[in-house]
Length: 300
Image 1: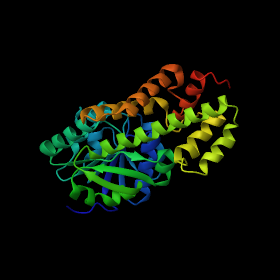
Image 2 (image 1 turned 180 degrees about the vertical axis):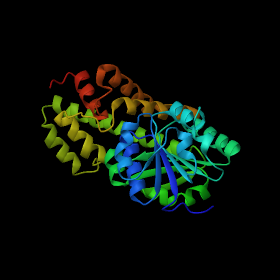
Image 3 (image 1 turned 90 degrees about the vertical axis):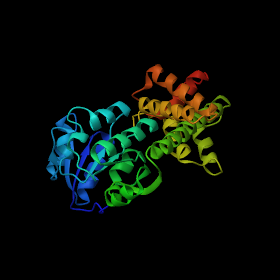
Image 4 (image 1 turned 60 degrees about the vertical axis):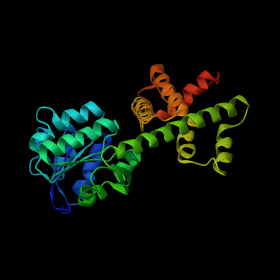
């Protein structure tokens, strides 16, 4: 399989907060880029730097040797791939389709099988970690499942958006790893939330407590970043609680699918349900700290 390098014709569908930045980095790497999205307004900045607008995923896929997707959930990916005007209608045999979305692992494996059998194209699942800043800076972590040869062929395309690329196995493997990632993050936020509530109820200064914890084995990305949001009460969304709820639901389903004893996953999933039901779905997922404080009787 030939390596997909600039200035090859490629496409990207799904220009949300993450997708728009990823597509911009793909264009910056020198690829000829076609873009698609439900609303054209989000494509204007990319069109201004040379990207071509496509009215449908099928149109975007025509002539492209690699097609990137970044969409909200499993049904969205299925519709963009196989619905009317979907990628499958325009994709050519040998094309590598890369799904950067965070969706369910089992359907992902089915999508890959169907795309290969019906169109001769390869689907890699490549959910990402690193948030909007990582998408903007091109430093995302990519967890990749799918055909190993397709992964190697698409490496230059993947390297335009990510710094750490790990091929984990067959289709769906990337999504399983992402479910584990989201569990670890959400469980970390819940643990930090409880720790800070404990400190406040015991009369400790939460900022001083965080500083002390940062000096020992408890130091983590969550303690460094999310704890600061919790202490300051700044919950403008970097990653919305409603999206973390979706991801923890996927984690819970993956645990069930593989018969894993997962009490932590169950508790975290229920706490995310409670968080969204408390009216905080549009806030950052770190607002879990405010819910735990509220349930603990901590004011302010």
